[in-house]
Length: 592
Ligand SMILES: Cc1ncc(COP(=O)(O)O)c(C=O)c1O
Image (tube, rainbow, N blue to C red; front, side, top):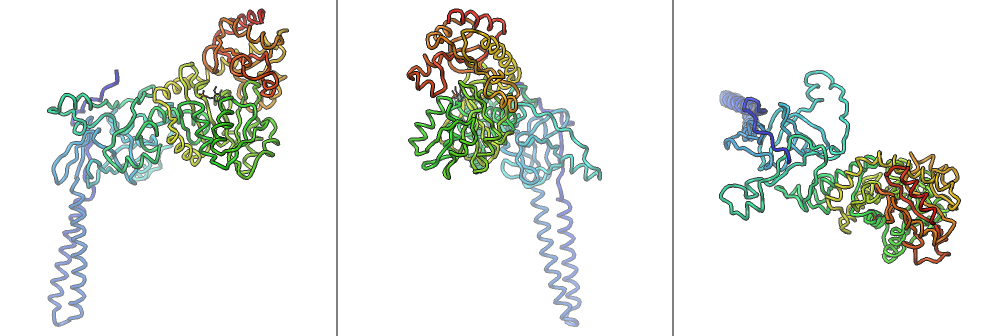
């Protein structure tokens, strides 16, 4: 059950704010008026005896009178809101028009100093705090008028200002650890419809009350897990804020295809893990790849792309992108010289995978980033198979990282999703606009499932890697196995690059059976712990035989060109007990 709003607090405990400068402005106005009168009187006394002095005194009197009118007007304007009280339920604003209570749900924004907008007002621990979108928390000390419709302006003293006023330096503040739920505002600005707008007031019809509901509680406490914001759209009281949020995904929520709080939490969490400036979640890995490539290249442009590539990406580049007039050159990216040679004046991106499937070749990202960077071309890296636990390509010079979150990030074989992470906000903004137009944003529940998976990524990657290592050792020593592809084996061509770039060798491997196509097929049908299924990165060990399943239409020559042996078996090592997997593989090898 969601926690309910804290009860309205005892009036003795509420925060009160006093007017700022009303008395001062009114007193100045009256003094200035008096001075104007005195000067005018003197001018009359000087009269005909000294006409020059009399004229000067009249001019001075008029100026002081104007100043007095200005001060009185300022005082009157400030007095429109002369005080406010915050309690557990809302803000009571007092002014010339009397007292008016605004419930927190009714305030579309609380503005401070420079017009900075706040995401939430929190009451708790005997203090009133305003929580800004960037997570900074400030305590309110005063209120200035005029009240503006549904807004109210607050003068805020943060720690530094308070300390400066006291004449001391601000105490050094240890930054609070940034947890997953804190990557975005834990309590977005408003929750639930305001009673006067939504129709929950007594007297409204049954259907109106049923449609608008009573509004969700806004807990003062932060939820431990990020909630699922399962809503297609967000309501506004303010058309300007609505228009602004349509253009700035990080500054408001409008429509879930654009941005959603649950999705934003996932984006911020994975961006942080990948050392990226910005993240963008999508409905699938292909959604992320298509969005990034189509935001980088247009008709007449060119891409340099890894040759042994995930099949879906190959199809996107060679068919969809080609139909849109985007040309591509496929190269062996283990040779950075070949990548440099393939660059053209119209090249808009170099696209590689950290660990390629099924050869498990590891791309030398720093070398590739250097070649691409020298030509001013962004390096885009599919980091699905490594995951950010093993490798963070942006740290090695990549401009964009893409993921099939369906795999290790989600990690439970129960969600399809994707992510793109950007080293720079400009590339992110272009991709975000493209994603909106392509309509590949994730459902909030899917984003939540990925976010839940990410919480255990570190533990799972350790176990996937351990199990893959055990299987690789078993297979490498077996007489029916011709070759094992796992970068952790010293004999693997990418072993040295992997040792340099990866924090572990990963849970994905493949091997060639000496018995060819039939042996491969017999093997995948004989395992009982390992399941015969596509995909990778889930808790279950999965096996597949590309030559008889995903690539069955290719003949031996075409398979060889794609780097796939007829007897090749692909394995995604799961999280089971290693002994059970070793026994299962030993038994299946008997019949292969
Ligand atoms: C390396 C790699 N990238 C991208 C994708 C596409 O991801 P999705 O199926 O989530 O669209 C896959 C899918 O298997 C993949 O293995």
